[in-house]
Length: 372
View 1 (cartoon, rainbow, N blue to C red):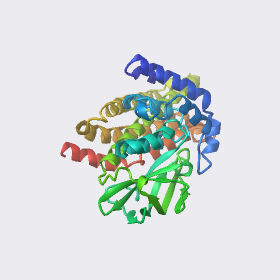
View 2 (cartoon, rainbow, N blue to C red; view 1 turned 90 degrees about the horizontal axis):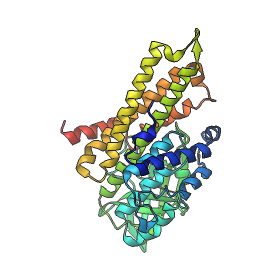
View 3 (spheres, one colour; view 1 turned 90 degrees about the vertical axis):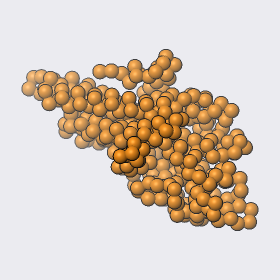
View 4 (cartoon, one colour; view 1 turned 120 degrees about the horizontal axis):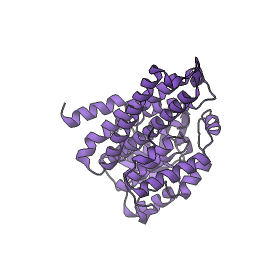
C-alpha cells in the first residue's frame, strides 16, 4: 500500500510530511482524544503548542506578519497529516479566520492581528453562517453605526472551535453591504453557547452578538463577500485534504487488520469480499488525494478554483465517508466499540462532509461553474 508521504510534490514537502507525522505520532494519544470527545470544548493544548512551535499555524501567512509565506499545497500537507490523527486542535478555524483578515484587513490591522494568530497565541474563527445550509451573502446579523463605532446584533450558528476562540471574524449587514468585523470573544454582549456535535473533537457553538465595537474592528470597511468567499474556499480545500488523511489512515487500519485477523485458519484479507472492499477503498483514497491536491494548487486562480474547490468537497467527502464506513465493516464487531479508534474517524468524516456547506450545496455550485 502506498504511503501518503510519497504523493507530495518535492523533497521539502516530503520532509514536512514526515516530520509532522513523527511529531503527531509522538504527541497525540488516541485515548486522550476519546476523552476529549466527551467534552463540549475539546482542545489538545499540548499538540497546539507543538504545532505553533513548528510554525505551522501561520504556515501560509506572509513572513511580514509572522508566517512562513509558503503555498497552499504545503498547508494541505499539514491538514492531510492532521486528518490521520483526528487531532483536537483549532487549526482549520484559525487558518480560515486569518485568511479573511489577510484578505480584508488594512496593513495596520494585519500587523496587529495576524502575528499573535501565526504564533498560536490567539485562536480565531469565522462566525458567518446562520443556517445549516450555509450561505453568507445575506446575513440577518446587522451592524448599525453608533457614536464611536458599530453595534452588532445577531446570532451565528455552528461556529467551529468557538468555545476556545479568542477572536471572531463576524459578517454583518450594514447600510453599505455585507461587512466583516473582528470581535473579541470576551467582549460584553458576546455569548457563546456550545452545541452538541457529531464530531466532538471539533467543537461547535452558536454565538449571539449584541455588542458595540470600535471603528478599528471593521476590516477595511469591505462591503463585499469576496474576501470571505476566498477564505471559505481555503476552508473547503483544507478540509478536503484532512478528509484524505482520514481516508488514508482508515485504509491502513483496514489492511493491517485484514492481515492479522484469522478466520477458518486464514487471514480475512485473503477472502475475496475483503480484498475487493480494500481495493475499492484504495481507489477512493487515491481519487480524493488527486482532487484535493489540484484544488490546493488552484486556490489563487479564481476561474479554476470555481470548479476545483466544490469538486474537492464532493469527492473527498464521499471518499472519507465510504472508507471510514468500510473500515468499520472490515473490523467487524470491534469496529463498533468505544475502545477502537474507528468511530472517531467515521464521526470526523461525516461531520466534515457537512462543514462549510454540504456536499449537495457544493455540487450545485459545481454545476453552475461548468454551466450544467
